Image (cartoon, rainbow, N blue to C red; front, side):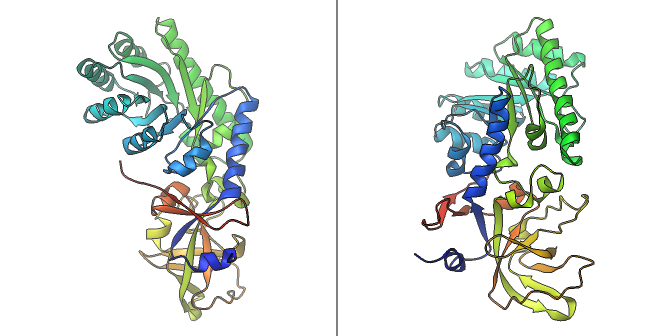
Length: 382
């Protein structure tokens, strides 16, 4: 069988590479953390968008799972996932599609944070003859959407759902601001803040006489940091299967944990500028600059050799549509490595979700070295 380097050389670049060993290590790490604390993990499948990867994330293939598009819900329902939360605020136009997915023996629940949305879910439940379940999004940190745990509108929304024909399934929070702090101690604080907001909202709904069976919290940083799951029924996380430079930059993982990379080919040099030009521009890496505000700015990605080992202080400093410009990090005056025309490199991404979205398949480096590269399909759309 050809060596890994030979197999990579035969790929058309840019190509998306997934390291199966790292992926399994990442999956096992979070599963063990949550299980040891008596919790249930509900993986978010928005990062992977692949039935092949989902099979490794879901314990028995049927869920629980989280999605961020109805296209994801449809695809994973077809593969047999039976318990899904669509964790983006619902709109009236999408509810017939939700009902159609639910009719395929998939318990799909929706998310909302307003009276208007709750009324739309109630109306759709009446029209379709289904009790569409909904979770109320609770704002735990001012990051994005949600109702404050002590806002009277929480009870008003709960009453609309509770009175039927819809179903009040529970509450859900997302500690998005945890991405703005670094280190375990800071993430532990955000995790507890998130837990208290969700548990407090659930308590308020129960005190008003409503059932609140699900108390769902989650973000990748807080999921890895949380120790106290009292009052919580499940924890969600998504990018943890692959990790990326943003997660490494805030201390959730190490560079060596990043399972996703983009294979690229050297197409030219600008020696007087200290540049190496490759065929992986922002159409391959995405425009995400999530590390720009961190302590270490990784440009558009960290440059590695074909084995996945980072090359000291070599990053993608600029990205045009189909051109990536590689140079030494500012302050490093060492000469560039010898990388002739046609040489291959691997680039670690800032944001795994955004980079993976540029491709329609993973080229998987298998766990068993004796096996050839595998191809796992991925999908897009909404």
